Image (cartoon, rainbow, N blue to C red; front, side):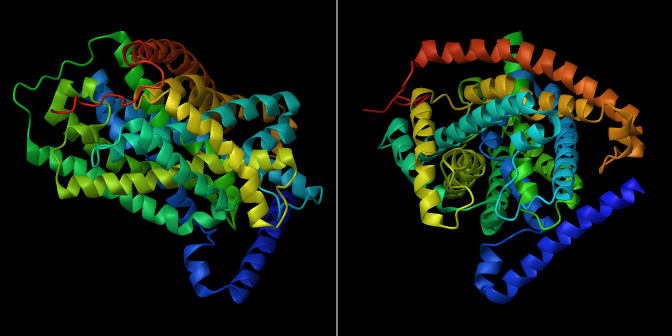
Length: 465
């Protein structure tokens, strides 16, 4: 009986949202519906797939040079599965939280639910604070990485300006994301973003195969533990893009349908990341150890220029994905989150961009910064905390009995779920955070010692006289 009651509550409120969607369809223009206002399963899939395979696509060959071909492939498959599992856990916790709140007649129509609020509602303020710290810090540096990537990529088309100057320029461009209200409004951007990364991935694959192996190519990885675990944590970072899962779910008309979306998105992403990383590493081998951006080794052609331009646009989109949850947090702190004035919200959001801009100028280390963020922040944000939170939330028998989303029986039900969660926590704590943190910090410090903070042009070739 309890489960039937839960289903009624969930379905009732989601149907309410669907009616709201239908009303909006009758009053808004067809153009607006097509490009601006999304909430379907397809919109969520495009958002997940587009967000997951951003600039990191260009650094995965660099990770393969650190790991070696076999380890690179294994870690992509392994972390792809692990990331999909923890995304499912976040989904289950979101639905649980939302159902409980809606039983209390809480209205979320003008309020975007976020991960720290889910933790607060289910587990209390200490969990909320923990989730808020790690999630915001990760998304802050995720936005920084997109800005660094913009400067790194444009340099391969126009090297008349150094990368630092390009960072200033793209920081101003990315600040325009303050005008995008929520993930509902990324419909066309998510769709285009996935096309852009698909083109870039297959360009890298085909261009590398046509280019062939460079003379005297060597594939010596793995050679050092530091490099090995640095590469592994970059892949951990690659499949840790579900820090915005809750916000994407909340933008759906039927959030309970999200649970398989991330897995399907991951499977598609693997069709891009595996061929491109393998092909580039096969062609250039150990040269990638000093070229963290794969585009820097591919010959200058019209196809490469198209890839660079498409990735620049995509990084603008991904900057918005990473920054929008930060905008929401800041709006709630200032007290304007539920206002209907888009201009007022945009003006309030602008200060969020300033520290991102500044950090991108201080640490322009495209590639190594991914591993550092992966080990120190992604490990807790989207792996350890969701697994622990799921175990604690459903620790009691009544909580498991009344759970809205029960673990799949094919995975062993609650016993299988707890076993997998314990494995995730221990693995990521030891390998991701422990060994990965040690390796990525050593590599990061090496970059600082080599190039210095505020590096004007990181890994730029010397200009010919």
